[in-house]
Length: 501
View 1: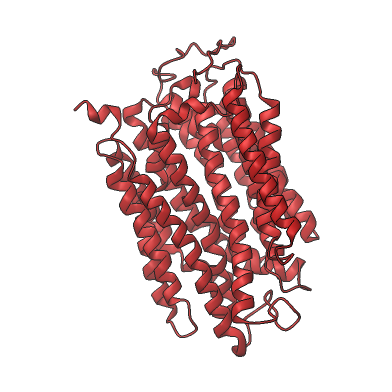
View 2: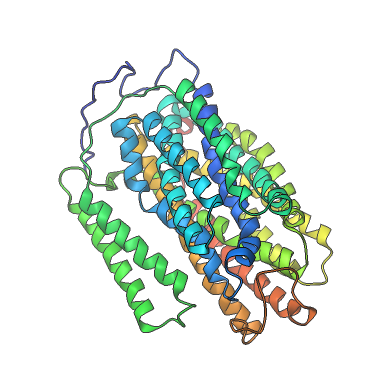
């Protein structure tokens, strides 16, 4: 399939269409400005994972089903995933700076709405609006890196991108724990307000107005992809709650069929499809997209059973539970920039295979330790191993995916990559909710009835053992999915600038 040509729109920036933008100025200040907003998105996700027990106790105390509060995360991820394919193109059409600023404003205002929510339903709605803002922002960060850094220097830039994830893993849970303990769960959202304002001002000043390209927007493709994602995710999310009734399976099957129709429609579109399937001719782009789906699944599904175990089975406060993630966050944040620079000089498999494998091993290690008798400090060990693994995972995958993209493909490519990552996150969030509920029913029969309270304080000793087993078994799901990612990254190729050496 041939990539459609695009006609540059009038723009004040004289950057060539097929070369690094603004070669006369350093691209680093713009990247640092964008990283602030990206950091806020990541922190918001990790903060919510720590606050879930407090949110459930405050807004959903009357039920013992954990899948209700999981919609606080799933609604965000669903609203984040569905528009990503088109928001990347919006960046190409109107400029990544403009689209980023609009998304940041939406995200910040929605954070205020989240903090003011008085019901779980209201919170879920504002979380969905947050997701829309995040979907506008995220592709623009990768697009700016692709368009302003030459291919042989993108590893270092993506290293900063990956380090941001590591720092967010530290700041998010710690800030969440301190805010929930000290002020209440509402403040995990209010804290976004000053960060959002500062990020908006810096991006307005430092991010250049990059060249824009005309695009036709595939409205039918947007509609089909949105319907397919909603049907599949809603079915997975609510399946356990409705005892996997026939209508739930029908919804999932119809969603899969609509997704197949969407892919067929994209292949047949003559003008400009929402997903340029020609990008997948690049093996590294295809492999990275498959692998990031498993990583997204892992990232959204592993924290929920871990935090519920730490707080409800072991009686830790949100702050104490968050401290268990410190080794992971510190090591990931410190090592990610070095991994990024190293990736500019070595075969990506030398970082990706051990990175994903160590992360998977750490999850199996967590599962083995999650029982009432394990000393709390021991949980710092798999956390440290996970930090080492993740330093060779996030940035290297993003770099490998975008290394060969042309500037005019930056928005589409980053939109596709972030969509597959977020689809993985949505599926992980949905699957872990059902799997946790299934394991609870298996280990504590009647757990979904009024026999136990899974929303407030430490659980009674009589149910701690069964609850711990259920959470430990739930950790095996993201571990096994990530092993699939290990196999997938074996099929990456050496980048062209290394093959010439």
